[in-house]
Image (cartoon, rainbow, N blue to C red):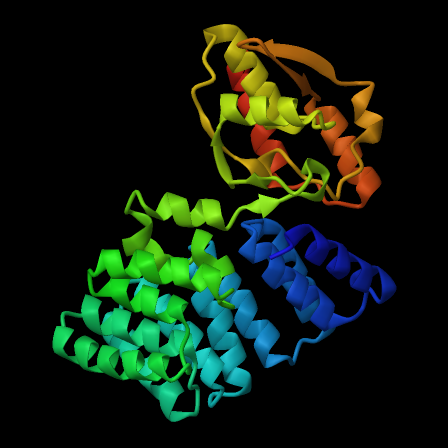
Length: 339
C-alpha cells in the first residue's frame, strides 16, 4: 500500500472535478481506512450531496458512522437508504453490522440472511453472520457456516480477512491473528479496516494485534521509504524523526498540550498515533519560521501553536473542526483557565 501516493491521486481527481461524487466517495473510504474518520464523514456527506440517490454512497455513509461507533446515526442512515431500495443487499449487510454493534443479534441474523438471499454474496456478509450467530449463543450454526466459509476460502472465493473475523468471533484468536498476517501478505481489500472495525474487537484485545497494526504502517516518501508504525512511544517518535533529519513540526493543540505537560511534569511516557502529528499533504513551510525548538529529554523538537495551525488549515482549504475547539479547551485547562 502506498498511502501517500493514493492520497495525492484522490486530491488531484477532486481538484480536476470537484463535483464528481465518486471521487469524494472513494476518498472518504481511503480516509476511513487511515483512521481520519471525521474527514471521511465530511467527504462522504459531500458525495451524497452530489449524488443523493446513490445507494452505495448512502450506505457507506452509514458504514462510516458505524466505524465511529455512532450506531444510532448509522442505523438511521442505512434505513434511509434502504427506503430507496429495500432489496439492496449491501444495505442489509450494513444494517446487520449495526445490529451486531448494538447487541441486537437476532435482528442482525435476520438482516444478514436476507442480504445473502437477495444476492449479497460478500465476504463480510458471511463473517458478520458467523459473528451474529456466535454472539447470539448459536455456536452450532456459527460452526456450520464456518465450514462453508473455510471451503470457499480454499477455492479462493473468500479472503483471509474474512477468516480472521470469523475466527475472532469463535474465540480462535491464534488462527485469527495468523489470518490477518496472511491478509497483509495478500493485500486483502478489507485490511485497511483493521484499525476501527468493531468486528475485529476480539482480536484487537490480543497483544499480538499490535504487530498487525505495525505491519499496516505508513512508509512516507520523505523518510526514504523507512517503515514507520502507526503507533510509537512519544520519545521514540521524536528520536526517529530527529535521526531522519526531516523537517517535521508538531502542530496544533496537542503540540501545545504536550509542551505544557512536559514543562510541568518532565514526563513524555506517552504513546501517540502518528496521524495526529504528521500530515504531509499540508504545506508546513510557512510554519517553520514561527515554530520554536523544545528539548525533550535531549531530543530537539519543533513545536508550532494552535493559532498557526488554524491559519495553516485555512491556507490549505481544510476545515477547522471540533478537534481544534477541544484542543483549545485542553490548553486552557492545562493553564488553569476556564474553558
